Length: 192
Image 1 (cartoon, rainbow, N blue to C red):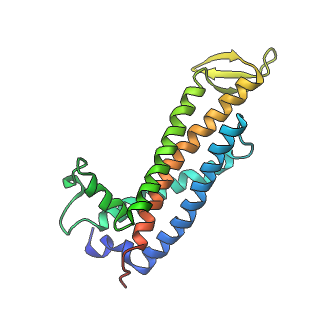
Image 2: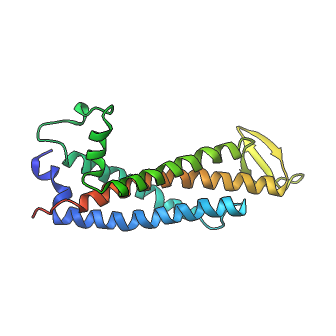
Image 3: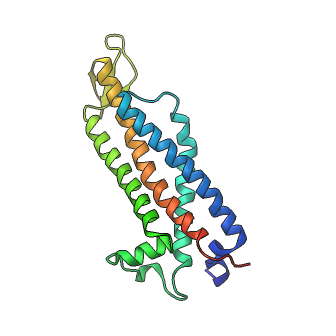
């Protein structure tokens, strides 16, 4: 990459892209928190959230690309990613979060951790399988690697909520980190 492409993040166009990602990530973080909270409170899946996946997955991809662009723009000229030590948390923090205030970074990392925790606990709630289509003799079935188990409606709802919470938790982790990278790009001076 040339020096011009390395500083895309600091250009006016790059700042506009970053702002669009900030808005999208804030909305995505809010949606993930609402889905996780509703699942935990209600104990059943939130209806109508499946179509959000069609927006979430491209946003995760775009956020990952932008996070790499932000980190790459902070490398000294001539340095490659391969020379960045993952054993140095301060270096990683500087590359991803730049000059964001420490409290903002801690809040975003806490959100990402909560997303991870929601996903891990959700995986435990669906150990018997994921919701499957009903059969003639069982209206509430769970499928696990080709094995079907008939369960009560509440067990079926808990498994469905677990699947949603797992996906929302993973997305919350990604969107929190992407939000930090996009916000940190706004903290740097623009270059024309």
